[in-house]
Image (cartoon, rainbow, N blue to C red; front, top):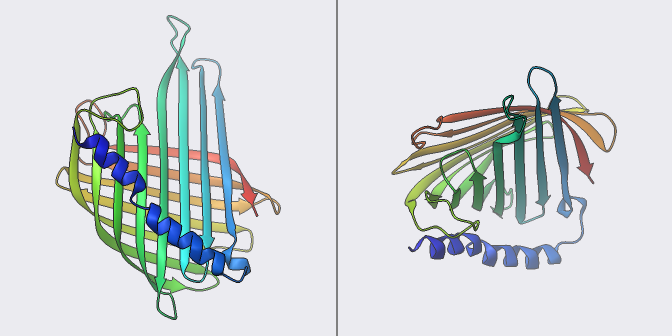
Length: 261
């Protein structure tokens, strides 16, 4: 089907903008705000006793904010294995991978308004889909911008693919649901204290086959200049989830975060 071609288009759709951003970034004067920053978080949970299970989760957050461009990259991975008491074999009960890249082009002297394009990919082996991918463009505005807090809101059209038939590869698909979407996003960040930061990142993609929502809430407290402790809640919802799967997943995690300065 045309899914393979469209999937490839989704992957390459942002490349021209990325190339332009890279050229523009090279022209920046090397100010502090133009450097990449971010963190890597890792969480581990091992249970032994009445229930034997191993659970790991990891996430990466990277950002670069220059005079005209703002880059945001996110990646998540969750895995869990649980022992079958009858066979004493460990079976995988959760496996989820997510990645997104977002590029904003700031507009005007105050840079409050911006154009955005965002590419997402998710592979959840327990969602009923082989993978999901989307690409959206649109307009946004930074409604609050202070030393203590920021608030961004954005909206725009896009396209979404949900692969229904499992395949060996990560992109090819012979049976899929494909439709146009409207994407709405809200991102809020609050500096609670010198050492603690609260973040909320919400996005919803509404299409003919339903709405997909992803909401990430986190509270990060610094231990020192490099390490921090993070409480995190991730909500993922699919209003048209396949039969036999739940519409909403909740993931709670506590982990150590390493800051990349």
